[in-house]
Every structure is written in structure tokens, then in C-alpha cells.
Image (cartoon, rainbow, N blue to C red):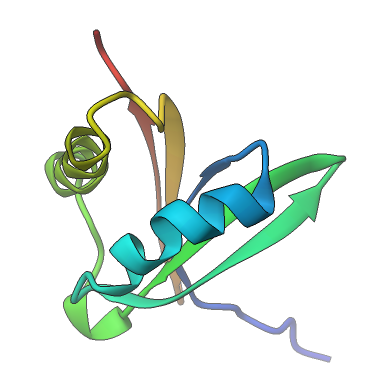
Amino acid sequence: MSKKSYTINKIYFKIQNENEFLKLNDEYFNTLSCVYKTSTFLYEDVLYYNIQLDFVEGRLNQIELNRILDNFNEYNRGPIIKKAFYKFKKSNDFLKLTYKKTV
């Protein structure tokens, strides 16, 4: 029996209030050309916002991840996202990056 291989290309970070965050910010992320779709998920009692990226755009590097999240924070005129994670997995290609907002 072979093990199923999943493909992943996403940015995710903690949020406090799902309805408020979606109302104020979901449209912003869904207008980015690299975004396939957005969602939320609960993991170990922590609520996360999940941005699934389009595989056609390929995988991000640290500079691109920082640019996307810095632009979002600038758009909101404040550090809404202080820490986020990026995960890419396709076949044997795996990458995990961390974004940390510097003041």
C-alpha cells in the first residue's frame, strides 16, 4: 500500500476573531494573483487563517513571503500579522519559512 502524497502551498497565521478578520481582510488576500483560496481552520484549539496559493505561481522564497505580509500590514496601517508560516510540499520538494514582523 502506497502512502498518499499531498501537495501544499500555503501561508497561515493565528487570528483571534474569525468573523471580524474575514470581514476586514479576506477580500484583500483573495484579490492577490497568487492566491487560490482562503479559509480558516482550528488546530489544537488555536484558530488559523489559511491562504492557499496557486501552484502555477510556484513556491515562495523568504523575500516574497515578507513582501506579501509586509504589504498587508502596511495596507492595514499596523502590524496585524506579527508571525506567520509558509509551507510548500510537492513530491519530494519541501520548504517551510517563518515570517516575523520586525518593529
